[in-house]
Length: 234
Image (tube, rainbow, N blue to C red; front, side, top):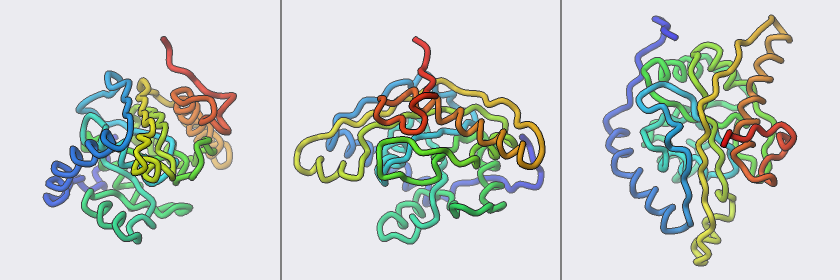
């Protein structure tokens, strides 16, 4: 995975401080506002590089995943988040990595690889953005491109309850159910072929990751992967 052309990844001091202060506060808020369940922590390969992949429903699930994750994780996020009041400031404070959806950005790709090369975990949504519905959408092949170069395991994560109306329900005192299920590490097969064949191979790998995520979710969350869901053993 080493690439001498890549810069060393570092988190600025202000972001290290912000993470240390805000992570337990936001985690506590989720526990206050919802009924939180976390499973599969034993599947996290602590202190190693890996890619965390999750189903992206709303603005709440990245914060939910980051604050409940048992170690500090770097985050890929859609660039438009930085333009929104409140969300943009939080993304900057956390030192998230901007992704311009629908575009190939070599600088972002290199930064993602530098995170993994530095031995840090990286979190991203294979769907490429929030869906505003619980049902899974088809994955984008971008994550397979990262794994093709980085060769690290995927940690699939299924999140339940972080719908757009979560906060509205919570402030009404309903305390919605919030669940995060962490699956076992997945190693993707090598990407094969050239041109269109190679793109199809990457898409198959992205779909494989989504099938593992689907297996961690209830049936009505599985969407286009309902028939491909790979349930964890046991």
